[in-house]
Length: 341
Image 1 (tube, rainbow, N blue to C red):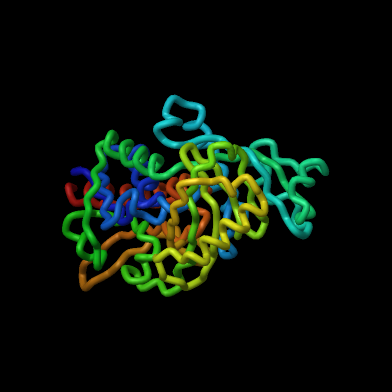
Image 2 (spheres, one colour):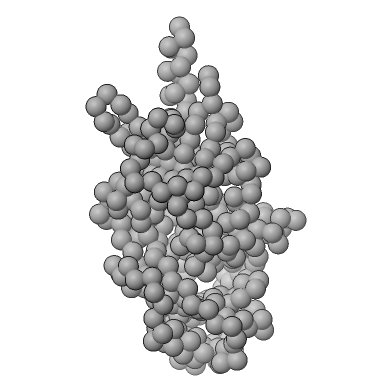
């Protein structure tokens, strides 16, 4: 049988990680990533890249935990290898703090991260406006290094990337056997998915090398995430806001809130403003679909809608998408064998 040709639409975190997973898991296939934007111009490049799960109301908790565990273990392996620096993957410790004691003091992912515990009374004195806190060590992916590393791995596995804007999935029908849809917000148009919508995020990237620990308000609206080269300060969650232009007042608010948690940030320099639109729906869309046009059929696997939790679950969802693709490949091989008979 000739090589099964697979096109992955989307070159952000989800598209590239899925493409790499396919190229490493399904021998004898050809994988091409097609997108109109590549790093450093993707939504993933704006994200802080820290592994603290976003909760998907429409996805069973056990499924979310499995995705998170697979992703955490995968990245921890990279972190403990010679690839860590090039991939931009590193461990970071810190605190998640709450102004009121949460109903669940121990989140579902507490046994996946390292050293999870409640903060001590002495630690809480650093945050006098807060009543409760959790301390743990997690992982962080710096972008664009991580996306570039994924793209490099794909190419080493024989994969390809192609800059092209897709207006309709049927454009790919004549050249590819299977389409993997990782187009994020692009699925509103490509798949007429009206459930997916943007949640606008604005962050600041600043130079403050003395900041070594993350600090996250439990609401998720204020956070300080140290990376290798800069610190990400956030943030915003503006539903159905498509505006990609930075708002100066929002930046002032972010800096003010972050300085309230870590006063030394008043001395931060080289402030850069980034805006991204999180592709959000109640659940990640991870499923098979066969598009039909007359007598023609186009197999599609969807893997999109990760909102602000993409980095926390990307490897887990990539693996699940790859299993769905394997089922299609097996069906194609069986069909080819029957045709020869």
